[in-house]
Image (cartoon, rainbow, N blue to C red; front, side, top):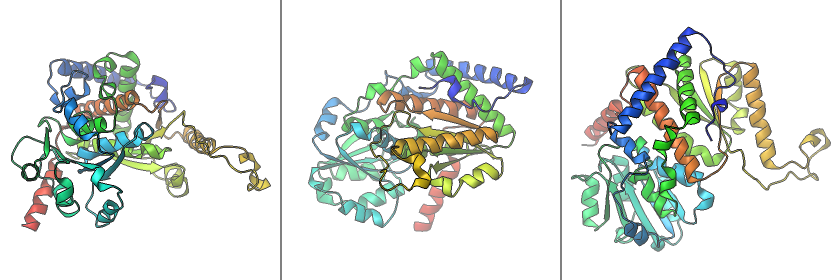
Length: 402
């Protein structure tokens, strides 16, 4: 999927400075590979096929009998599972519902779920004390429904969630302490829900082979070098321009990964999501003629087959060029037109075409973006695994509520 010529091919950079950056990043990449080999980055162990989950097949089988999966969490604890479900929805027979915000309307959404008795509840919180998760759990969900159908994924320590788990005799799955929320998609937090969805967990994981693959490594190094170069030119706004709504949640996952991992010590990038062709009618003017402080990542699925055809009986003669076209061709034309104008205006962009919607493809892009983020963190000298400012807000909120 990830080929060298799919990335920033419209934006050629040459010169001693860029070549020096390439050499520097290659050294950092080799150092990262050694760290992985020596298990110095424990959270990335979950990206390997060798990773041992904290749940058994019997536990998966026990809860797979339910048609509805209701998942409650916040941020990275739930965003990975949302990305998986959205990306692979056509393969999944279960109905999956996500509650990942504090909103009075969520209670209305909850009541819309049909056949609640045929539902299991998966609650995910690394710390076990996530205020929004505990609040949703204790305001929306009925005690009777939770009995014998509640699974909690959290650290093995005393916490608010562990107290609830013990009270309702919940299934406990340990969330590894070394794995932060935004990196947890291929650990228990993302993979247990994926297992309930009936997906093949091993197919998501290919870290060891990917870092040995020349195309993958070359793409990774060139992307990191280009983004680093753009940052030095004060181009720090990273916009995902997405033309497939099934990729929205993947975009939000990427947004959190970049924002929380790199946004510290006055460093980092501003990752935002934009949706084509809808935003052609609101933001595209800014992208084309506004400040030249942005680079773009196009998301699209190259082999999507949409059956909807444009009716020739309705189309007036003035726009006869669209007659007999299907919806996918119109979307693709708008995406290609945008890239063509970006090229003319020398706006830096890269393109990711998802050729197949399967576990391998999604696992590869998860791995790529995580490694890209870690390499960038080493270049700008920040710790990609903490989020001290967020913890400050959590403490202040508890102080106000006390």
